[in-house]
Length: 333
Ligand code: HSE
Picture 1 (tube, rainbow, N blue to C red):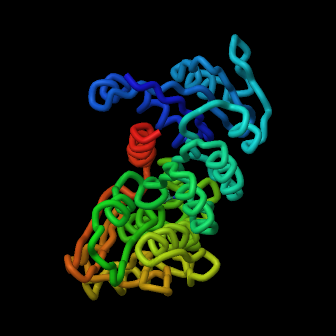
Picture 2 (picture 1 turned 30 degrees about the horizontal axis):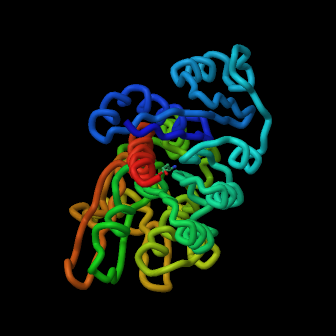
């Protein structure tokens, strides 16, 4: 059995969903991969709880869910107020997992790599702004730096582009990459108001903490930037064009509906060009997804058109992508 030490940053909805998967599927991971995960630290915005012999995740979940913050934990565990950079330097771990929304997380991702630790992340801004630097550092050190859950949750579009289509050259990607806006547009098509639809998306935990990131197209823009980096080479969010769904009215949706179309927030990605904007798409198009589904239509020179569609948001759906990466990293470190 290979024991792999994990250091988990972020204990919000996604972090807790991940912790539940690690608890509930530990026997599967032992049997299928010979991996025994030992979570040596868990951090939320209040504290870092660190126990080098490995902590009881079920207890961590109980503390967070009953007391609201990890700093309230008062038994044998050591509770610290390290900054993330201090934490990745101090805490001995094989894999650092970032499921936070920290926009400056690239600093501690780099610190973790420099300490010889693999990094798995669902956090988009580090990649959308610092892809070349992060991937360069990981490659120089021959360490896994994995980010499947940043785009389309656990639906494996990143793995497809990075590990599967190795001989193809991608020519173009068109994709619906934000679950919240699809969910809102779908509910509005069914007669709900924008505000009610957004509230429901927030209740389901699919909207970002600040949902303006979803509505204004920023979240989809981060994801489209990451897909460009994979398919065509590095770019940054600052270089792309983004427009959200804030200007879309029920009348726009009704007009599109009468013409056999639906409105979706569509990312168009070609070499050197990325845009995100609401577009009318035919109801039979692979991009006419509903609810929290995402879809990407990938055109390549050899394969032609390939469609990948699946959950683009959700807690266990995002945990799926993170866990896949944790297993990949664990098998390599
Ligand atoms: N807020 C995001 C979405 C979550 O709605 O798609 C998944 O990245």
